[in-house]
Image (cartoon, rainbow, N blue to C red; front, top):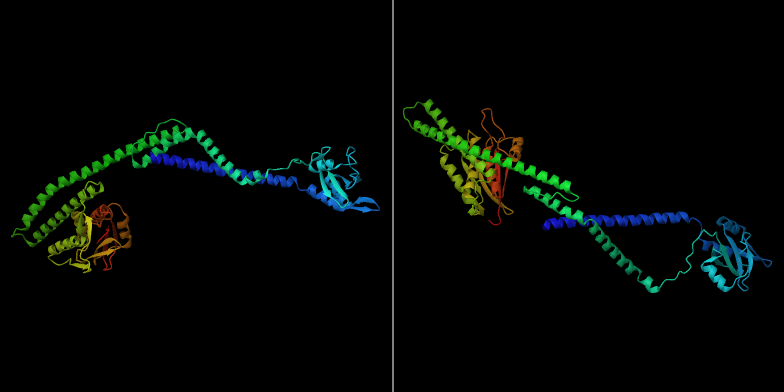
Length: 468
């Protein structure tokens, strides 16, 4: 439920953030468009500036006032009329030819104050100070709008920044409230959808209520869940059938195989056998023993794959376990075809980590047996243990025939044991290595296969450990 609320909150904040960004961008674009329009609409000179320029262009000749021809042309271009009012008498001492008839010829101070701030007979007027008087320009009635009371309280101007900030916060809160109110039903219907999607990867049954704006999506999730549950049940039945089949076949083979091995053992002890018959019986015994190991390996691999093999972890000295396996193989190698060399630093006497002792011994035995199986003419097997960066590294190497880099890549990356068989149909580098990988994986470690520095194959078991 917490994850569901977190997801809905995250979704809401994402939508709200998108809304706020969109609003800000829209406001900015509007300001840019309005500024662009204002600039295009006001390409001419400022009317106040034109009034100032007109006042400066006014000069007196023989007690008469005249305006420069250049300024007259400017006024005509702006469609403005002009009057020049004497400072002392308030009378118009000069005017342009196009002054409207109802424009007064004499002005009081109150009249001048009014036209400076606003209009004269609905004409927007603008003033400029001359040497002997005041220049008044009148523009067409619909050309300019003048704000006649431009007075602002100082305290209001002073508080504009904080006022705008408070208004912004209030606007954001209002937008959020409106957004949540209008999308409440939608967000409420999102919750079960999010919860259902979260349960799908966990392979749990999902039943989302099919109502609201997302009812169709809820139905699709329910259908997907039903399909996954059905597939999971079928897969489980197949896995159980496979496991039961392997266990049944192994059991059925083990009984006659035991009889074959028993009779072969008795025949091998007969004194009246010729050399050729004794060799054939020996071959039968060895192949029977190999078949028995394969059956045991197949059962163990199946159990490990389906987590049916219990793992009993206990603190053990890994060095002692590996040495014990090495001694066992040295004792059975009566011909000396597979000598074992122990390459462990004398300073490393113990490495205590939690392991399942029988399973780890099985993994090391499989690696040694693998070297023996693939080097019929004999080879030297090298065992070493190193401790690096809180990891215990067990290496099993040989100086035998080895294999190619391509096959090593297959051995490292192929998840099953049906890797390769030779012309005689015997599985090569397969089941034994698979069991090693499964055992080490169940201990939280990893298995790396590579070329040996001695010329053959090398397998490194890397087990995590906190202390050694």
